Length: 121
Image (cartoon, rainbow, N blue to C red; front, side, top):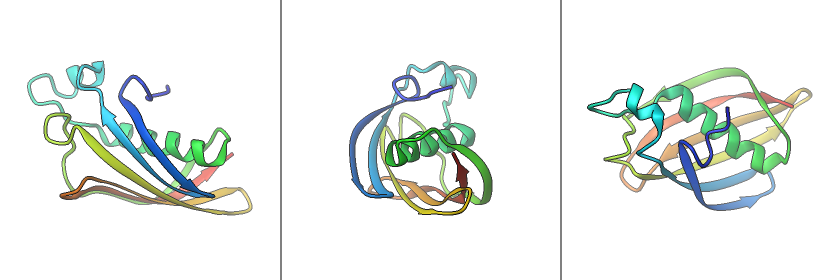
């Protein structure tokens, strides 16, 4: 499932080859928040990982699959009320089967998620 324009909207993108910075805004009316959780909406970690994957696809111009996650640290809770906009920083390195990826989701005050893994084409 593609989350862009449903779970988040891309505000801006700056890229330099396989590195990029994406500024996004969460969509607080998204159905995801009604189920996770109705009275206190929280961004699910799996949606954060999918958002990183979609941004990585914009850098490569190819559809990608998350093939392995070596580390995923959820360091703070993302909610559309407390963090309506955030930055996703991505650095990718080509491998034999795809790309090694390092990514962070943050705003001006804190880092919400750190991800290291591999994505394949």
